[in-house]
Image 1 (tube, one colour):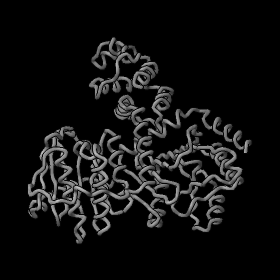
Image 2 (cartoon, helix red, strand yellow):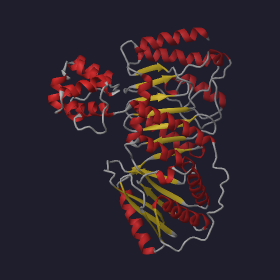
Image 3 (tube, helix red, strand yellow):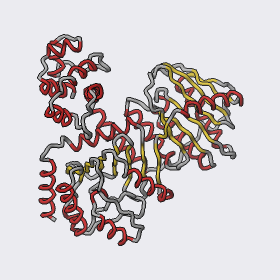
Image 4 (cartoon, one colour):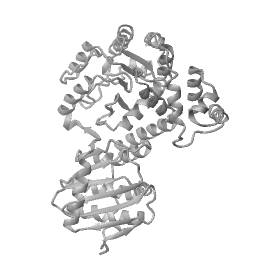
Length: 487
């Protein structure tokens, strides 16, 4: 909560209400209410940056810097540049941890449900009809009608093409009707079955829940590996918004709106080739300054994935990993080779010899699962084979190696997760991206490089890790030794 953060930092810097009020141009009594929770933080308050600037300049001693780093759960060293420290404090103040954690938990739940379910049969009654001859549609309902008209026509055609899709308008046209959403995905999958490809520009949104929603809705399409998703990496003001749905050989739908207001917006449907080409150029001009959003790896792309994951592991950025139980990062190389050799798959062992920080969030199964040889091993390539299980001795050997790493490796840390077993592997490379993999067969791996999503998952895992203190390693070692004794 903001009031707790403000209190901790003011106490650390020995700052009075009056001092901070003067620096932020607000009354000392208002600072007092912010500190005791009597006044909630408004959206984008103008005083937040001056507050962060003033407090950052009072962080001078090494002990203050260490305390600040611990408070904000910063996995890298605090920068020397005071402006950078100001920005870190400002973002920490403005960040709503509870909202972010709920968004990610909702996303992971939807992610698993979506992957485990199929689109199923879709009732097309009422949609396969004679369309209007009009070339414009009004409002949200009009947009839906225009979009279905476009994609149903694409699905009926036999000549494949590349579709160009972008929308940063209010998602209500997509979110408020599950029937419409299912129908749209049905037509898209039918189009993909006929060889059509898709280039799609996602909106990089400060409202992370909207971004997660959009990705989840598109998961069935991503699994076809026929879509190239992108995002624009810089901030936009979000006032003037636009949608482009372009099928160069068929038609295009285009619309504009102001901020969140899509009531009564005008949606154009055009089959004019010259107009379509102009809209395609507009899309490509925007695409030129965008970046790839994600890569999707399925069993068919194992070799490509193996090369990529090795390169990712070598990147010199801090790593946070949350496997269902234990990860390959902490597994001894000899054990990796034994397990892979036992199940008859190519050996692709990884070693923990990095000079950057690694934090592993461990989940310890019921000891009876270990004794029954029923704990699945999470490998860097979960697509290699059906579930691989530890023997009891192998699992204990892995735990003993974690104890050794905690003792000998200054860059490795591990914390035991008190939560329930996870169905997913979450692997974050700070500042690069997040790997999200299902470990149940058939496994699918998503790598998302969008900065807001990467930061959200980093914060999500760090909240689960908690504050790393000087005795964190010793506590984890003691807990692991006690656990081993119960097996």
